[in-house]
Amino acid sequence: MKKLISAILLSMSFTAFSQGNNYAQDYTKYNGLAMTPPMGWNSWNKFACNVNESLIKEMADAMISSGMKDAGYTYINIDDCWHGDRDEKGFIHPDPKRFPSGMKALADYIHSKGLKIGIYSDAGSMTCGGRPGSRGYEFQDALTYAEWGIDYVKYDWCNTEGLKAEGAYKTFTAALKKAGRPIILSICEWGDNQPWEWGESVGHLWRTTGDIYNCFDCVKDHGTWKAFGTMQILDMQEGLRKYAGPGHWNDPDMLEVGNGALAPNEDRAHFSMWAMLAAPLIAGNDLKNMDEETKKVLTNKNVIAINQDKLGVQALKYKDEGEFEIFFKPLENGDWAVAFLNRDKTPKDFSFDWKAHTFTDDEVSKKKFDTNNQNYKMVDLWTGKNLGTTSKPLTATIPSKDILLLRLVKTQ
Image (cartoon, rainbow, N blue to C red; front, side, top):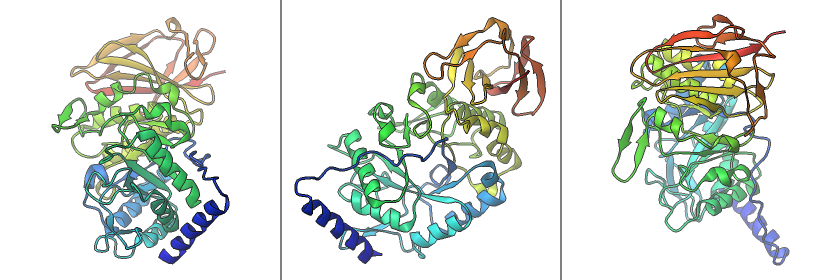
């Protein structure tokens, strides 16, 4: 493989030389990828640096046996700490003790299961876990990943002193284009440099916040940086919906569903809101040892359909009463998804008169919601129950830290 990649690099250099001063790079991403939010699994939230070949194979197998592949999950993403050393020519290799068969063989195994493989690198000199970063090796790493058969790269932002985010990510995008394999690029610079303003042409998704923390409503202070609970991250999505759409998504970070700290109702609310946000659904739990409650949340096809809707519109916050919020999400076929979120520590009784709430989504979809002219059937996406139609007000009680998620289905 090293000989092949060296030959490619030599060919690229000769081409640039033969063209005189024409050194222009293509800094635009591969189009046609991630037309709906990516769905998959990532190793970090549960296993952190404790990754190896056997674990990744087990997670791929479990994605199939658990029903997650059938529900739409596709990517098996290896996060930080897979790295070994660079060789004398600068090419990266996986840790030989953790990945003795090599990354190409592992990619082949995952592809043989009908899944896709993702990998992790960093725009800086070292990854967040202290492994070799891609700074100065962007084109070599992109060629290596393409040769391995990688389908998705999460590109982090640690140890990037002196770099400008937009330029650094454009460099890696250009490297991926030169490598010649269509690969999803996940921009992971934590929203510090407003990636939503420049990321659409550069990557397929971009982190909007710092890291998620495994709690419903809290902040974890690490001293030099903070991690955020699901509700804090939800609040940070304000004002960003206009930047999301097919092929370019706001990423509020990976899911914590099934990692133990959240109660089943909190898992439901977390998963529901990520679906409403048109966020990537990247699970971060132990797929091999899921309880039934976790499996029911992660494989709820009706909720997933809200996330994967081809219109690709992120939900709008329609009403905010502090601990009680209402979100609307227009869907491709004229239906709507509506979420009534109770963030409070006590149950919430409410009544919602649909006919009194008419609006147009002027910011993004231009869709009008008006039940005076169009009636809808109300379907509870967690129970599957038909709750009647919007011809009458909806009256319900939502338990503490829980959600009522509806699909409003057009009637004749």
